[in-house]
Image (tube, rainbow, N blue to C red):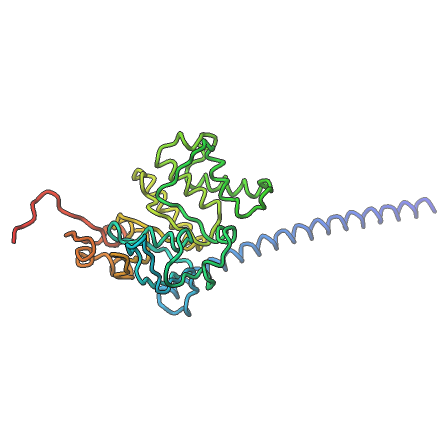
Length: 330
């Protein structure tokens, strides 16, 4: 009788233990399900919030936007030659803005002033509400990345090494690259289609391929502001389209502020939401592509007679000119 009682007790204990294990498994499974549902809700809410913000922005119903970069009466001259004259400009966060204008209008100089490569001789430049000159180099590099139109590499760094240089601002001086850093580098190379060159010296690449590597390095830097001087230079049409799509993706999905210097007026109109037209170091007009790229303003600033027509894709203004016929006489 005692043995039977002990056997029953053991069976009950085993049953209870099995039930407890089953209950624990159920609880863990339910917790995983809840976490998955929460992640889905968070993604849905994030998308809804972004869509709502974009709708309000388009209607002009948002409160005053946070300014990423502001310039107040900024002037700069090379020796005695004025290049930027009394420029005032506010660039809101998450903007996609193009600087256009004829050669010598001050576009690249303005980009160098906003990235602290040059110091204004008059006026004030602010980044996130703070004077630009107060930012140390490392702090500035965490916020802002620049791709200039001319960059030379004296040493045969591999493409992967060049892209990994974008992680320098996020590490201590002697700190090794962590797995997260390599993941960021890998993702940047993948987005710019340079993974196949990762082990090749950058000196062996074409000009267009080098340009894509520089874009990858800037992406690996993970800035909130990206400045580019002629990013489509040396690129064939396929990679021009790819770079412009990537810039739009960084702006819309990652909410990155992008400021780009472009000579191609049609590309500027297709890519950017805001255009700043410069002439002789001064701002002539700021507005949408349709407001800025007009025959009258192009004649006034470039001295060129052009035809402006809506693109069949999206309706943005496109620029054409006639080289087949002589201009009519007076």
